[in-house]
Length: 256
Image 1 (cartoon, one colour):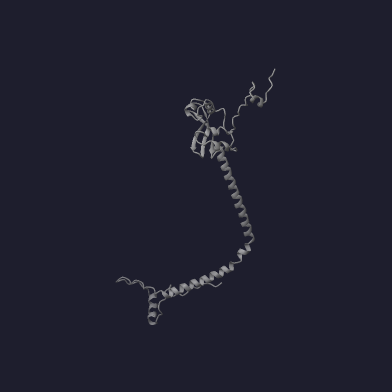
Image 2 (cartoon, rainbow, N blue to C red):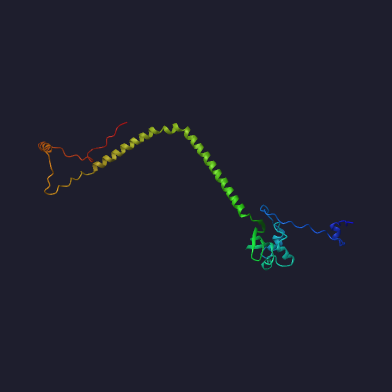
């Protein structure tokens, strides 16, 4: 005959019946990055240092009760004793980085031998709050996805602005062509001003220097056709020679 179950209150009263054992704890999931654990009552009671941080971590849902550290705790051995953990195989937790009392990094790993361990997950305790660190591939995927989103948004915004600029330019073609007459008038004024400056510079400059003399004993060859004009020029007074640059006056430009 099956023995009827006794309520917990009667079992606690000192009867001969024992309460049924609690169900076995399930191992934590792989992706628990959306969970944050914090026990303010424990933090107000105990200091958070390297000696007690593992006991605080064991209260969180990230803790695997089947790990080797729990076996050491049941044997009243410090759960982070590396000399004892190196003799065992299976899942274990190691304290990898410590910045007391603000930051503690705990690594979950699988030990196959004293020298061979395989990292699995990482957790960090930041000012009393426990988090699971995301995996590197997930971080890269999130960063690349965010960058692609903003790049796509930037191209969309730039394309919309370029379309608006082109639309305005096509509408205002007549307006952009109107001020050409004013620009031409301004150009004529600039031409007159430059001519006036050049003319004043020509007046200030001295006459052109004479050509260098011929060497001694050198007589330039002359023809009969050249001698006749020379004789005529000797009989008639000639005006002074004009310099082609200085005495030509202001430049003549066509009027439009």
